[in-house]
Image (cartoon, rainbow, N blue to C red; front, side, top):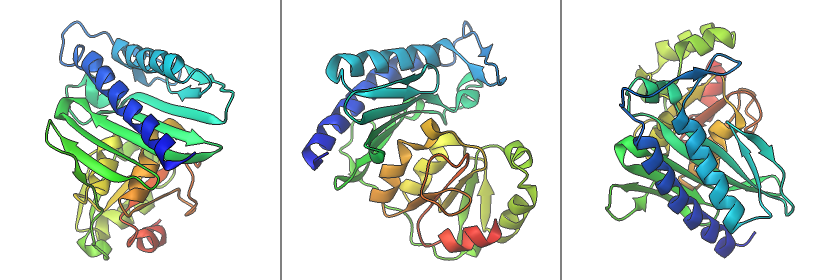
Length: 261
């Protein structure tokens, strides 16, 4: 896919994520919000389902040959090697508790390569986006987008480290690794889900660790992280969204993080 084709789909994803954000915010902090539990006991709401339905509808109308893989409605195969990976509300637990650190993730993949992504934070009115050879960008409100760049921190002793759920370290059998990281890092904070990765992309944090992660949680973030100068990889150091876990760093700290794991 050419840079111009990537840019076209990226602009589309930005527009659709803006629509989805309006829908999601119509449910946010409302007493009428109903929370259901999926089979895995994770929460889901009408905002999750409605936002994914909206995004899928827009994709089907604009790019009918593209496939879609989303958290709420699974896989719809495409016919041209292009696939969208969706997490309509990444951070549903934050959303249902009235914490504004949730986001809408839209990733673009072609022939197995992640090419572009949008991470929109509806309650914060921010969006981070980027694409291959298009750069990484950060927009706050209606201000002009500005370049997003990772930090230059090169020692874990100086690093700000984020993670989503401390319980997930136990579930993943990595409690001792978390203890080592927490001991060495300058600061460790639970700025969770896509927001933690967004902090790395924009240079406000240096490492984001997710011991349990699904492909739709990471697909949109990977192209943006790369364009911002950082790296995304799994526990083995492999550049993949299918490892069941994921780490974003500024690139300089990859080896130091892996040694602690």
